[in-house]
Amino acid sequence: MSQASSTTLNCSNNDLDCAICNDLLEEPKQLSRGHIFCYKCVLRLIEYAPPTTSRARVVYILCPNCRSQVSVPKTENLPTVYLIQGMVDKEKQTRAVNATQAPEPNKGECNSCSQLLPSEQLFSARLAIL
Image 1 (tube, rainbow, N blue to C red):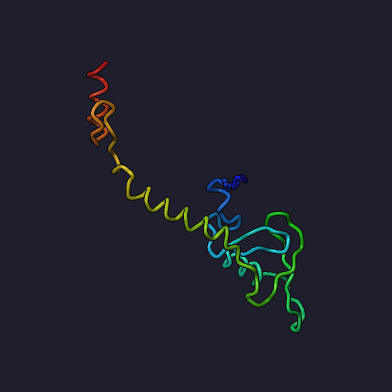
Image 2: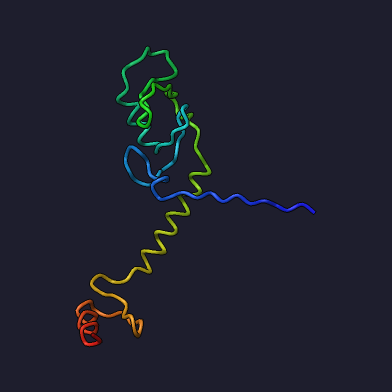
């Protein structure tokens, strides 16, 4: 009997950040060297690239990660990395859930009764226990 193998992709939050804007990747696009950036960030790179002939279908930019010269199509034909987009979407959902479950500012959980109390009361309760 054969067993199905499963592959788990582990990545840190930083792996899902654009190296240009340092935000979560938005519409992740892959350059020819394999590095991935936000679509809007790639468009900015193209905008500031040295001019090429008007008939050229590509523009040459320096990859922000490896500093290699890469060609980028002038049109919107850069491949979207859907696997990364899916992971970014999951990360956004996780952050949204965590934001709704985050404790209120200046409050914390009591170690003995698990109530959410103002931080001043937590401090005085700790002193009383000592």
